[in-house]
Image (cartoon, rainbow, N blue to C red; front, side, top):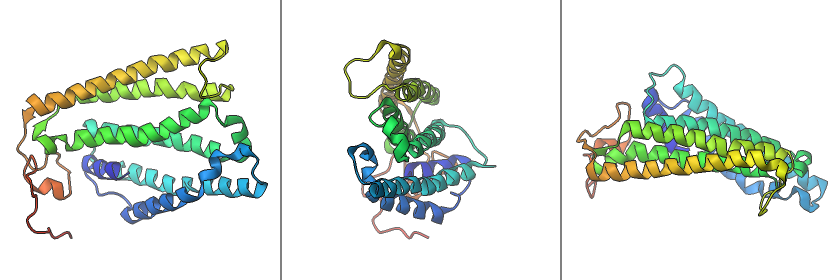
Length: 263
């Protein structure tokens, strides 16, 4: 969340919309995450009161999560946006994370979860949240700060190719799994019935595409560190803010001899 909240304003040339609400939303998600753990256990035979509590608590997480998504979208709204690789990964993150949020609301409903539980629908939901939330945002972070780390610029065309191949491969891998789960395919099995073959084949092809794109990412990072075009500019990105952009590139050891004044 913090990575996306820093990169989107950089490439939208606008301050983050609703900074205070973003902080409160993050704190709310952190608090609510401690009291929703039994939404994984609707089918164990817990009392109705327990199911209701965990169902409503889980549904409530959608509110601060929605606040964060609208903050990011509103930040981009009418901004002077450019679409370098870090921004593409952030936009991809927002889209995929929102899809994962919608399926999370579906899974939060106790009566409905009896059908979805331990099916491939859960696998699809989990990866739309965690791969988008972690891998896409971390990829954005690497592209965003790599020039500051090593003083060399990555290959932009290769970075954009990495994004689009990853985005297509990811959706081809995990979107069909929603339909597999709705059709009744359980997870954690070594084999599956023949009626699930087509969607599983699509998912396998997408997984190879997505995995191959990460090799392109690795090659781009190594190539940048070893032979990338040197950059001596302190601010690699025009709209970048933050203390790390006020020092030399690459950042020296013992960056600040005295604590900087933050206003």
